[in-house]
Image 1 (tube, rainbow, N blue to C red):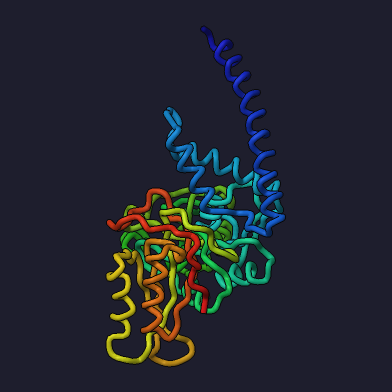
Image 2: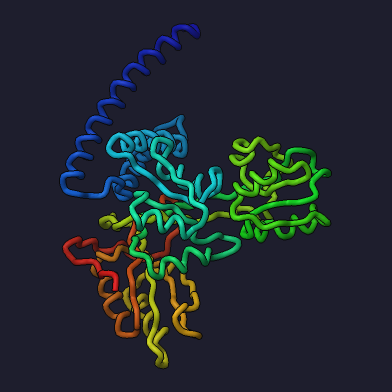
Length: 375
């Protein structure tokens, strides 16, 4: 067979693919109509994870799993956009890593709303100006994003999904490296590149910016300025990539949360995020955390933040494996309340595909048990 014969085969396959994609979308729209009648959430992370896991199991190559997921992400994004004009708020401006994380979850077909601050993202979803919001919550190098934790204390929103984005920082500028007199970037990024900055950019003025995209925007306006940001920022703002992967540690990853109005049902492979404060008596914190050990629940994260209401009081943020509707998790939370002055379930959501997990038996996902409510 020659090239034209193979191309003819591709053309016939494309005809079939288009027909099948439209058929799949029509079925998805019927599901969307039924969800609308029941006033259910349009975006269902549990179903999304199920689809991606299933197509991965069906894949025999040569497509990689990542490529297949990217294709299906856009198929599902197109269907979501046809079901409803879905608006997703994120920490902007365009080309921030938060924007990239949002695109990796919701695809290119939905509408995106750029917000100036993390607080603005919360406000947009709380005021129903956006259906969902995407915010960073922690970085593997620099730790927690405190602005996000502080807003989680009093929000009415629920965490409904998470994602992890590998972060690759680049030196961007209009001109050559030697022309850079001022360097912009987000404070978290400056921390991630601290040793590289001391070694490679000694004498250059370092200026914090609200985001990496804002840093690139400023660098694009100034002749002797540069920015530390991602490649997408270079593309959008017309800058040159002077050097890639300038972060001090490889494997630098940021975790992002999707904020919505409700958590989804158990999938059998979930995480739950909690906020609690303990009573002022000896052993309260130990007693609260002891419930996880007693019920063999793996705690994957713990952070503390000062209370804004009273000096020397703290809120604790914890992630555990399992869903709030799992009986074993519900029992542990019930026992925790004996030691807590406040206990809030911030959300239960599917564990991200490929994320490391602790060694424990799978939870009993008896969905008839009620989830603990926010208090």
